[in-house]
Structure formats: C-alpha cells, structure tokens
Image 1 (cartoon, rainbow, N blue to C red):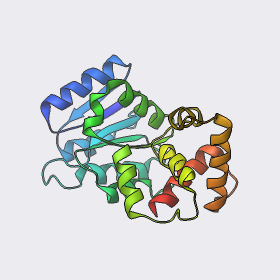
Image 2: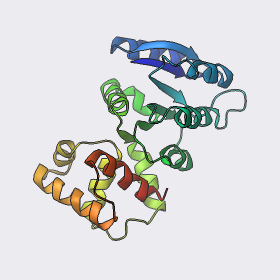
Image 3: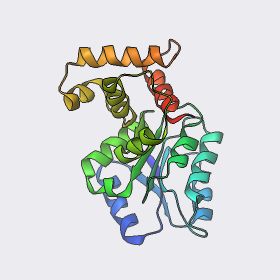
Image 4: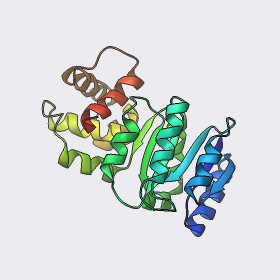
Length: 211
C-alpha cells in the first residue's frame, strides 16, 4: 500500500517508516508539517495515510483537517489517525461521512507492532478501528445505546475497535453464533436498515458516537 506518513517527532516518524516498510507498505512521503502533508495527499497515486492529529505550525488539528479534506475528495480514502490523547470530537468528525476506512489509535498502541499493523490492514480494507480508550471515553459520555443490554454494549464496544465476530467471541468467551445474535439485536435496536454487515457495523458505531 502506498502511504503518506505525517508525524512531527523525528524518532517516532523513523520508527513508523521502518515498521510500515517491513510489512510491505511503501512510504511515498514522510512529512512533519501540515503544508507538506496537504501537498503529499494531493498525489493521486497515494492509497492511504497514517498521520498525527496535531502538526506544525499550530499543533491543533492540522492532521485532522487534512484527513477530512482528502476523504471529501476521495470517498473512503483509508486514514489511520494517531493521537497522544483521547480527543473524542475528532473521532466523530472523521466518522461523520458514514464510511469506513478510518482508524483512531493512541500513540502508545504503536508499541504493539502486530496490533498496529493489523489495525492498519483493517482500515485499508474499509474497516473502522477505534482505540479501546477512545471507545471507553465515548461510552462514558454518550447515551444513544440505552436500549442495548450490557452484553450488547460490550459487543458494540469491541465492534468499534474493529474486531471481527470471531475475535469478539474469543474476547467475551462466548460462541461466534452468540455474537452474531447480539450483533443482529444491536442492528435492530439501533433501527439500522438492512445493508451489508460491514456497512451496518460502521453505522452502529456512528449511532453510538452520536454522529
């Protein structure tokens, strides 16, 4: 996958380059400034981006705005966002299009190389991956899922992390069939229309975020 990488901390940027290249990704551009990021994302050959929310010059939301902008031009463009902190509003804004291909991980997650690469692969395939701490913050502050049981909320929380039904079953020590039943209940209780399951999973996360 041809990627743009945006990270202003040199050591982390170099570490990410090595990790990504070791897993068969091509780094088209590795930048540290918002202007350079905008220019790099204009390249039509780029297939995805890994970027920090905050970049120079203001260290506020430059990375976010670049991500939202490229997805407006290229529907479903895969973006993996890295952040030092849980910034819930950014996750909501990125997900507002109703499409997948979005990941939001805390930078500490990059310490687990396998998990990071797996999350990026899911995003590249059109999935939605949210860091567990982002998930916890959202659950504590949003209430569009009051109709769901405790178990259904657990399933939805893991779904928001990008887990498959099999992975959810393993995490909750239940059968995959039971997870499928909980998932269907979630779709029904959140009044989600019949659609491919991948789309409804994204819509379920959006409903949960209140987007």
